Length: 229
Image (tube, rainbow, N blue to C red):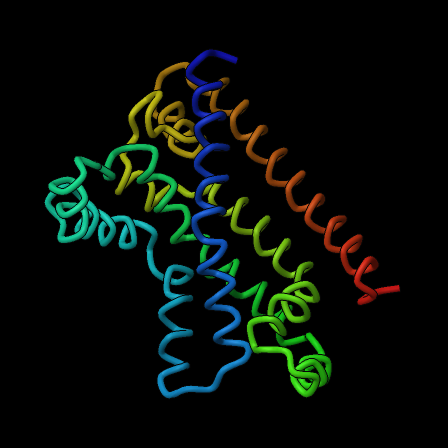
């Protein structure tokens, strides 16, 4: 592999890891809210969270560019206050990937939390446990297989993100060129079939390994906490 291919691979792994970490806590919070609370506007919140699944990724990238670009209302604040520029950096790629993977994480965690036996939570509350303690010691541990599955799905989605990333972060070699944008670039370059095919095979191998690891880890965790035989 050439240095440009290694650069695209390492940047993709870095972006996918950071995007997964960025969305983890907000994703668990949103999933808990949707799984355990009833409130006016819940259907609207649910629809907004899942909107990136149906929107063209370019639309998500453009909205991020308008809001977090140097002249955006939030991006301008970051740049003028702390000198932080987000658009067209690897941080933009991580944020774009996080937005696109967020619905998958929330959905997996929410389904896992909805399967947790409510009687266990109610028993803990009758013994005097606070709602936070019930969540941290009963709900979240029992939903761990779903959390793990959601994390891996979000990681794999981030690894394959293209439309929002190229709109918000660009396609700058060594800075924002991830695996999908590198594959796109090679397919548009004479003689780029070989590198493009290598990166396609690497993408498939990493995504497949992540899904298999997720399934095995979820089964192991389920056995550890007594959810499966």
